[in-house]
Length: 228
Image (cartoon, rainbow, N blue to C red; front, side, top):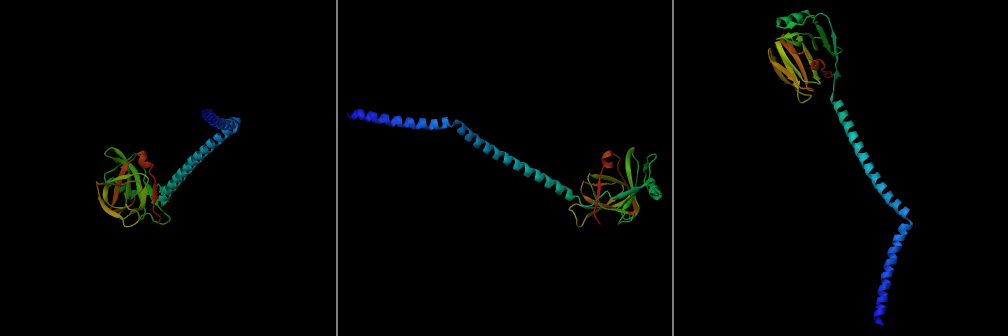
């Protein structure tokens, strides 16, 4: 009598476990649509969070780019291209150019360049330029009278010039505002600065004539003058 009772009790326990499992399955199968919707809603919520995070990252990157562009614009401090060019006079400058050994191009004109005319007179911030040849190469020629100069300015491209006559005082501000470095350039010597470096030039007691290649890159170079 004892064994049948144990078997029937074990059977009842097994049956009760089966019923519990079947009930759980039935509850999800009867509400299968709700179960699926819950799973889908959880997945959608996770996807939305991921998209939100990606959007946030994109906004941060865009703002960073904008701030970088703003910083680059703010770094340009000065007057953009404040020079007026007129075709007049310049005979003494032309004689100095010819005496320096340059050959003027056919039909070349003497262009008077006066920078920051509102505050500086021509001899404080100006020069004459024309076109000619050196050893068969076409060049742009700049002539400056004794003690005349070009005030502090910077370019967006590298400037490489060669002094053909006289003496040139060449100032550069490599570290920004402050005391500039100063070098004296003699005739026949090249000199120049990379883009963005502020520099100024002043002619010695005999004046100065210098030149650079007459190419499209140099012709398109932009200039900013330091504020007065």
